Length: 455
Ligand code: UD1
Ligand code: CA
Image (cartoon, rainbow, N blue to C red; front, top):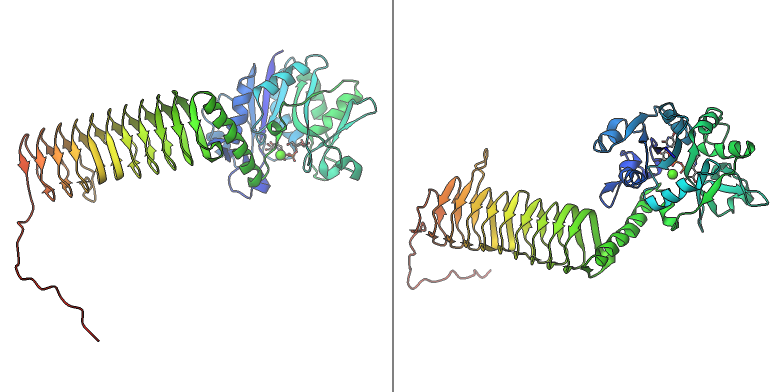
């Protein structure tokens, strides 16, 4: 069957109490809509349509990379009205799969099953059983168990509210009849909305069987209406992600204290301690250890790297055998070549550090090019900013920089040179020399320390 997929994403999401349209709220770093789209895109389809409205172009602009056709629903008059906006684009011969921007955990496996279930009568509906069905439409069946209609919670009679089989809203319907039924919808209900759910009763009246199937797990069809539900699904999903990684060769000390907000390509024998956050696109090699409380974003990490606790790394490339932290900060556009050591309270920004070089304590290295086997002592600062412009520092191979050195950029230190501790380097230093710039030490003998006054 040729399939058109319609994702409804025009609603505001009042219960989020947010200026941001609901489908832009994020789950594991991706918008809810992106999750739905990703599952939908794995089902064979002719086209994916996204119905948007609340928040104007924000929803559309946030997903410019998606291969979808965007359909504006100017006023949010209900789920039936939302589907109606997409129908003129859909050919009669198609089947239509309807998905919801606020049901992000739906899997492509379930969608495949649903599609197959529609092949006979042309109508399949995904339902589920919730212990607490509050807020969902309920499935009404007749004596022989066939679905006859759906009643929304707000329109349900007392005994109908106790039904635990709920409408997920997700369905596959033949386009021809769908167009006819949508055209006949009325908004005579508590919410004065055009309910998509009313088409079930119309189909049944025409003698069409609505085939129902259930997802493998009820969590897949949980709608997210407020931030508490979002947080609950986030934890659930993070556990799934942690388990996926563990099955591929990552040891995670505590899967309930691990967060992945993006995509990670991993090697094996990776050790991740507690409270680690990985964000964006990452690539991690073999035999890598990440200590507790590290945040790592958009970074490539080579083999045999050790990242010690409380380090923050963003947009960097870390070569093989590097050792970073504890308490290191590696900022964007940093490239550490193999076997570099970055120690505690060291900040590196927009710099290249050559093979085997060490910056072990309390330093700032920014806008710099550091060669190989360089040793940068404690408290070294590249003074890269003059208040208006940034300037570069170049440190060639095999340089030794003593502690408490300031390098006033732009400046270049030639290969093999030594900078004495406490020097403020204001001009280039040629290769193989010692640069020393500190006041000479004086000695005052018989010095008496001041005494504390008595009151
Ligand atoms: C809907 C179903 C309910 C089902 C529940 C499952 C109807 C009438 N009710 O209720 O039976 O149990 O989903 O989660 O269909 N939307 C639009 N345009 C609109 C209205 C809604 O695009 O005019 C979108 C929303 O952005 C949202 C989705 O449709 O993504 C569902 O709308 P929502 O108002 O949340 O419906 P529910 O009350 O949850
Ligand atoms: Ca909803």
